Length: 231
Image 1 (cartoon, helix red, strand yellow):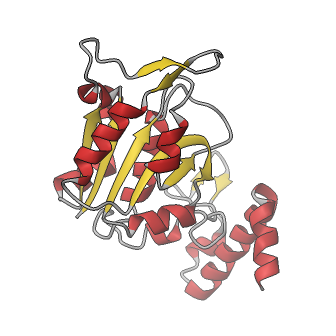
Image 2: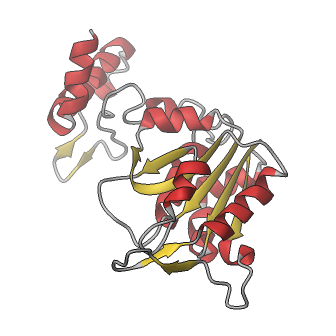
C-alpha cells in the first residue's frame, strides 16, 4: 500500500477532493493511505506561527524552516520516504511520465507552500524533488498537491475498475486520446462515425490511431514532433 503524507496549513482544503470518486475508493480498498499533517501543530510558540518576514525585506511572508523540519523529521521516524516533494511553481513540470514513475513509489511526502514561499534552506536540505502543475501561481500548494495525488493514485493497480482504462489515457503513449462516442448513434443529425459501428477491430484500431496522431499534431505539436524524432 502506498502512503502519501501531505504537510499543509489548510488540511480542510483536501476534504472535497479526497472524499469522493476514485481517491475515496482507493482509500477504502486500502490501495493507498493519505494522511494530512497541519504544519501549525509543529510550531512551538503559543500563536502557532509558521511564517515570518524575509531577511532583506520584500513583499510577503516566508514559511519558517523549523516547523517544516520538525514535521518531516517526525514522519521520517515512522517510515522511509522515496521522495519529499515540494509543490512549487518553478519545479519540474508534471506530466504523465512523471506520474507513472511516482505511482511506483511506496512512500511520499508532499509539502504545500504558502505566502511568498518557503525558507530556501528547506529546498536545499530537506526536499528531494520539486513539482509544478503549470506555469502559473496559485495561492498555495494544496490544489497542486491534490492534482498530483489524483494523477498518481489512479495509476495504482486495482484502483480503477477497468485496469486498461489508465493505459489508454491521453499522453500515456505520447499521444492525445482519440474521440469517444456513446448512445444514441444519431442525435440532431450528428452521427457516430460508421467505422466505430462496423465491428471490424483492426479498422477501428487504425482509425483511432489516425485520430490520435491528427489530434496530437494539432493540439500538442510538441509531442508530435517528439514522436517523429524518436522514430
